[in-house]
Image (cartoon, rainbow, N blue to C red; front, side, top):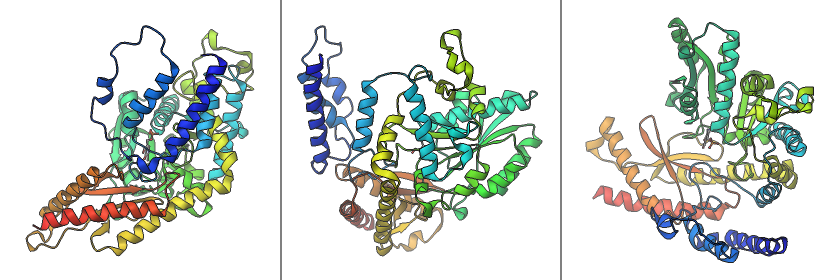
Length: 493
Ligand code: PLP
């Protein structure tokens, strides 16, 4: 493709992307294709001869788009949102245009320095303490691919730090602490690093928040058995219910054990701290006081297209001591001088995408106030949904709504045979599973995902897509309400 062909194809691509965004009302939220649809439609060998680009671009429309679940659709309420933006898309496009792996300062100074700057901007946007800023030269921020990868990075760093401080420690005794509500990233980090993971119990009475006493008891038990807990992963905004661990209490317990690293995973909820009124909820103060590292995904609720997972550490040396491998072919005089950051030593791979560009575009274009407005709108829409749930005798909230997430279930119709106990819970769960299956049948209209909390099957409703408005909550509620009536009627028969 030459420059003029690219110009034409590029204009066409932007036109088609605009048409895609303008046509969400005619598109299903969840892809409606069947397994194997694409594998069957495509040739099993690559083409021998070059193909015309128009045909390739047409095939994106014809073959690929039907197999896309539309995460940017305003009626997408599953998992957590990936609230992308046009600014983010353009950032990605420009980043792709200079396609380079920016692994050290010299390989593209702008990639490194822009990342340093936007990570400080994001830290300030969220109210993080100065010790997390790149500018201070001790701590710092780096963009990872995902929160799961960030967890592997911090576990590797925490392990290296612990073993340096305790040379007698055996790897088989090391333990990663999570809770029963921690995202799968804790177990994944344990799997990758070959380390044990202990999930501490959290209870519905504490709204699934880890308490200091639980941690204290676990530590006493494990230490007495010669185990070496070396990192605790706390969460602000758990995946199932948006729970927030009690970081004040956790911090107080860990204060007595400085060699245990505290990582706080706020993959979804962290961006809400852009709004000062949610900083207490998001435990900003104990994070600033106690956390060794902190992460949040701007690619979830933060208007930046996937992927952009922000990680800050109190001490950058903890990362580089664990991850710096510098063969001769990677040495540069700037690195040797110590004057620059080489981000290759702050993450797992060598090459890295130029992610800071899209973050820069988004933050400049929205401004702090625009970013806050987006967050506040998501929370206000969730409050509206909560008012509908509360006003309906057919539904109940299972946990206290958290920011833009609600967890609810269908009320079990009264039946003397199922007054209480396990039978009632089993029946209640079956009813709600049937309800969720029915809502799945309407996946062209809305997308909701389920979870189980303390044995209770429930439905999650997560707001946050950039185009969701009150009318979309009304549409979703209509689907929920009508399917609930049908399921309940069938159940009563
Ligand atoms: N942590 C929490 C609390 C999450 O909810 C999620 C995903 O929803 C993750 C981590 C994983 O994020 P990633 O896909 O960036 O690894």
